[in-house]
Structure formats: C-alpha cells, structure tokens
Amino acid sequence: MSLKGQTAYVTGGASGIGRAVTAMLVEKGIKVYIADLNKQGAESVAKELNDKAGSQVAWSVGVDVTDWDSQVAGFEAAIKDLGGRIDYVYPIAGIAEVSWLPNRPNQKGFVKPNLSVWDVDGTGVLYTCAIAIQQFRRQEPNNFGSRGKIAAVSSVRGLYACPAMPVYSAAKFGVVGFVRAFGKFLPREKISINAICPAIVKTGINIGRSNWYEEAEKLDLVVKMESLINAFESLLGGSDVSGECIEIPAGKTDAPNGWILKPQNDFTTSESEVHVNYSNSQFAHQHDPQQ
Image 1 (tube, rainbow, N blue to C red):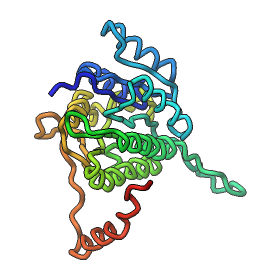
Image 2 (tube, rainbow, N blue to C red):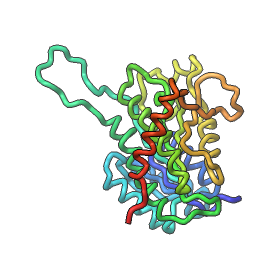
Image 3 (tube, one colour):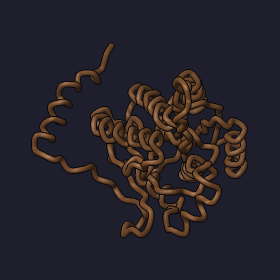
C-alpha cells in the first residue's frame, strides 16, 4: 500500500539524523514538517526538498523542544499546513553530553547543575510524544489501521550506561524505558511508539574531543546512516511493532539491514514478573479515556 499523501513531523530535522529521515520520508511520498531550533537551517532543508520535488513536500518551523509552548505552536502549525492530520512523529532533536557539574572541591556553596542535556534529550522527547499522542487520539485510523506512529531517537547509551556521560545516559535510558513501557500500552488505541538506538553516527553534532570521529572509525564504532534509515523505514506503513528498541550496534552484526531488535532483560525471579504485571494492573486506570 502506498505511503503517498501521508504526513510526518520531525524535530531536529535541519541536520544529522533528522535531516536524513526527512529526506527518506519525502522520497516515500510523505509530506514532512521540519521543526528545529535552527529555523534558518530548517527553512534551507525544506527549500532544497521542495525545489527537488518541484512542489511543496516540506515545511519548516523554528521550535525549542525544551519549551512546551514552543513545541505546541510548532505542532499546531504543522496540523494546519498538513491538512489536519499527522501520521508519523519523529522526536529526533538532541545534544551531546556537557559538563553538568564542575568538579571543584575547593568551591564554597553549591552550584546549580547544568541539565540542558536532560531538558533536550529527555524532557524534549516526552513533550513531543505527549503532543503527538494527543493528536493521534483525535484521528481516525488510516488505511494501515493506525492512528499514528512515533519513532524516537535514543542511543546505545540508553542500553549500556557510559560512566562519563551520566546525564546523556540518564536521558537516553529514560527514552528507552518510556518506549518499552507505554509502547506496549498504546497499541490498544492503534498508536505505536518505538526507539532507534544507534552507536556513533557521523553527524554535525559536537561530541567529545576534536578527533572523536577519526578515532571512533579506527575502532569500528561508527555506524552507517543507511542502517538507521533502514530501521526507520521498517516502522512505516503497516508495521505493527511497538514498544521496541532497535539497536544499530557498532562493529559487525549478522543482521542484513544493520539493525536488531534489542530485547529487554529477563526477569530475575518469577515474582519480578508478577510485580510488573501487578503494578500494571494498578496504574492502568490512569490512562482511561476522560470526557
């Protein structure tokens, strides 16, 4: 079944993974709204895609994902320009680890920590998901039987903790936990959510030291953008996958498309599983429809 005429909203779409996903969606016939803090960059990408297509296939808007009102304004603009419906949402905007707490043993008093990484990579993703889910719940199922699909970007550092990247790891683990939890609840509403968890991807994001990518490539830690796009593509259309984390691991993998579904840890005891199921039954009512 064709994807032509479907619509998507991408945060962080002006560069890196977001830009690559945007280009892939347009190639599939999907109209895309690009939301990015770099408004000029988003406008440039949209113009490039529109010029190439010879018609309007992409729009742009400046959005600060850490600001709820900014996110709402950007999404409302997308709903209006895309004809009232959005089929896919991609919370991709993100930043790398920064010094969250300077190590100054002789300092007097207490310094407020820098939680900007948490704000963008954690809260920003949840804001985008919250807006998307509310919109999806208002929509009728499309030709694929879906009210809407979300594919967020986490990281392998949301699967394996990195000691020197505590806030980034916390945010990415948070996205993984949210997806694995709510992604198993939402399908009853014909909504899905998954997370893409890549190793190092060569983008314009400022990570580590100046020779970060060069040294990473020598260690076979850099993954192909093509593998990420393959993962995103697998979740389009009639895919019924939800609540899963797709890992694009460093090094060699037997997976033909360069990605694997990363399973959760096994329950330590039978009571551990009972505990999860019991907790689920006790809190499920919080998600009942309300007037």
